[in-house]
Image (cartoon, rainbow, N blue to C red; front, side, top):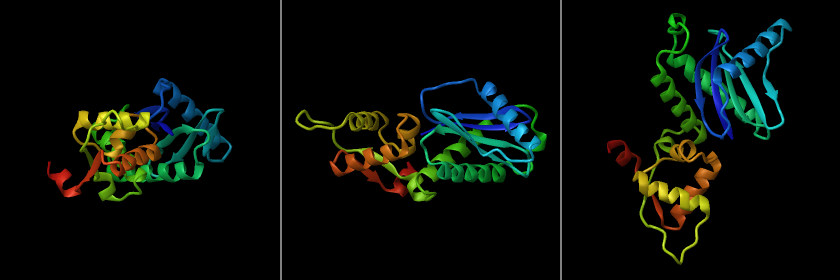
Length: 208
């Protein structure tokens, strides 16, 4: 599971996004530590790639264009190469979105709304293999749970959430219900097979 995303410039956390997990640590404190390790690696004329702890690891990607440090915190057992690939894609998104603007920033990142939108695009696009139609895919509830039927706790949670929202996307399950991306996809597909949810046409979800 991905826990946190940090964007750091000159030892300052210019953007932080809580993605999943229950552990909350001060972003400025974490960023200062992460930045110090990256500075130390420069002194050794090397590049930091990962800090691994007992339960968590921090995966690094440093921009050669502007000196920003991008770090994702994840569970230790998560696939390192997969996370590294995702982090590189976020760096690319970030550099394209804010090209030419970072020299004017003073302290924290001013356009936070744009950074939030960028993060959601990255989470959705990477989770669903970057296909726009998958990122926009919407699910709507069609049947409530009856007494004689049995669902898993996760399925009940998602179904109740679907009726509360009216319609939802897989990114909603990941961000709001804190489900791992694979679990979110599996639960949604299972509820579709059992007749509790249906996929809404992408064009319908865009126009509503």
